[in-house]
Amino acid sequence: DKVEKSDSSISSIASNLWQEAYENPGKTAMVVGGAAAAIGIAYAARGQIGKLLPNHREGILLVEDSPYMGKAFRATLQEQGEKVTWFTKIKSLQPFTGITNEGKEVVVQPNKFKFAFVDGELVGSNPQGEHVVDALKSAHLKSFGISTIPAINDSMVQHGAIVAAQK
Image (tube, rainbow, N blue to C red; front, top):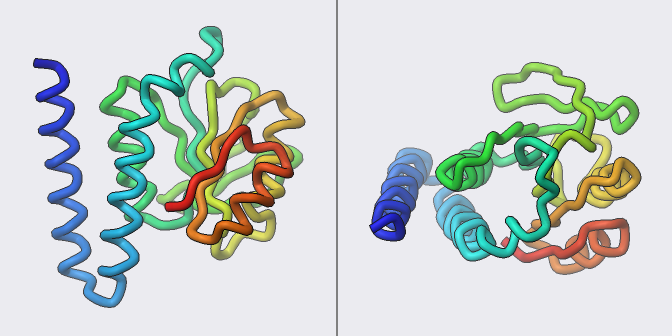
């Protein structure tokens, strides 16, 4: 019964993303493919991620510049009971400072999070995904890299992501 509810909620998220994509036809191809990948990765990984997460930490750090992908990831993770801090850009690695989807600048301590999802290509951000995962590794935070470009995923793994997947 819980699986059916979760599947229904994910279908609702997907439906909303389709509507947004329809209303923004210039971005439709990237949005639909990326959102489906994001939902699929997060949904498929939910049981595996739990095994990696330290119990004394709270929330997931999400670094994703695309509003559509960020919304999909955040909604899926929140449905799994996770608190999500979402940054669309990284302003500084020391102290770790991000810009939220609403444009607010926030300083966080990465070691307070359970895990991070990091986009490899951060439009408008000087530090890119490989720099972010490197900084997170130094702060003892495990990260999962996500990019459309395989070479960027490889670079994120080389810089500290425990794994990377193509979106």
